[in-house]
Length: 157
Image (cartoon, rainbow, N blue to C red):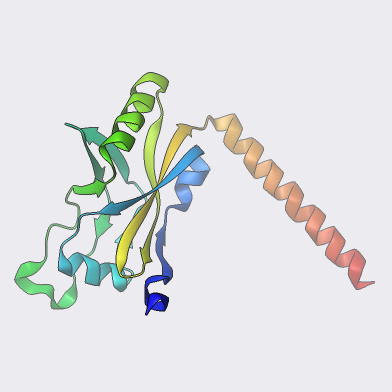
């Protein structure tokens, strides 16, 4: 019975976020959806690429997330780009609000996944990368790839 709840299935990743931002801290939060949106997410029809989060009137909202309409949803389908509420404790929201305002940080959704039957969002408290930071990361990845390749060749001999 408890086995069904432990299911963990990633539906969408925002890989561009890790390229454009330093992720300082991550949070798990729920998201308020309608039934046809959940069905579309189960099919994998979701895109987090240009999404971000904002805090308005003590509530956290995710903006720019695209959930394609469910094919069998007919009249129950909602706008694919609608603003959706994220579910966090008020205390967490206020702490994040303070960090975003004081330190100039951003809230970016990193991934969307199922935890049991519930849809969860992995939210990152991020700081923007400069162009030279991105170049450093690319150079580091390239050198690591070259080292791994050389070790693999050496082990073959």
